[in-house]
Length: 446
Image (tube, rainbow, N blue to C red; front, top):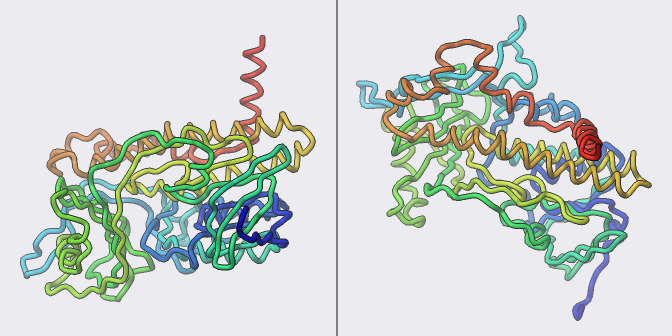
């Protein structure tokens, strides 16, 4: 290399180099540290991302939070709801304002105990992604087995039989980081994925999606307060981001589809347009009293990497797959990737440290299992959830959609069967996957 290179001595012995300091990368680093595996996290931005992004955490992600010791901390500041509600667009209240649209269906994940407390995994935690990231960063650094580099952008990786050498650039100059493996948790435009030569396969949705965080005074706060708005032109999601009470100011998230492709992005992000969109959804008197804090406009995709493991390189989270946000499956699936990959590293490095073939099987089991979860659970579930919101007249959808009809019928066994993939197969047990892989190989050899 022609330019001077600074080798980071603190990171030289990192076993795993994690590229991307978002929640998925930080969770992976923390999980690895708790298994005694040292990592170095490289984040190209100068600070954690504060834009409005994922907010809903449900199902087995709660159990991961419990196992790493952050569940109770999150619970103290998070909003909670026992499930999801499908509604029509907000309607005139007869007094010049808006009221919540009529309820079409609801999915209640669980019931509280006698103390009013829900079991982990049986409700939805509503907690902003940036706060999760900050908490994970603090806990990871506390272990002493994680180093974190802001403003450090990967641009090349050299692989050998002994490990990887990651080349990155920063304000200080070009840097080198040595490790045994490298993991791309660096989002939909992953540099690691590009360097691996791995393609993303799938499709993009035509609509744009605008996410807004606002402070407002809600006139009512329903028990089930994650609302999916069913409307062919103005489908959306709304949810509180903190514990909300009627008549009290609180932080809320409104995520709204922009279905008119003739309106350019520069018009969509103007305050006047954002206000017009919010006024179609925010219930309460007019003039409406809310303050817009953050806005994020983006395209939605259904994409999956052709592999999540190649040689000494791995992918997790948005670097490996992208899904639309309906159902809150994106970041949660990425976090469950991190959980599975940490298990795979634990098996490979702590149980099979001197068995290269067994290590390879651990890593192949990871990519097979997590790609299968996306293809059989995440992609069909999120795709159906999205199209359900805008496929026609809300009354017709409520009467004719098999999913909403099952929810309305109220048969708990049938409702659980609807969500079997999320309940029983979303999280991966890597030891079980490895055993199943060995059993299949034995069967095939007979």
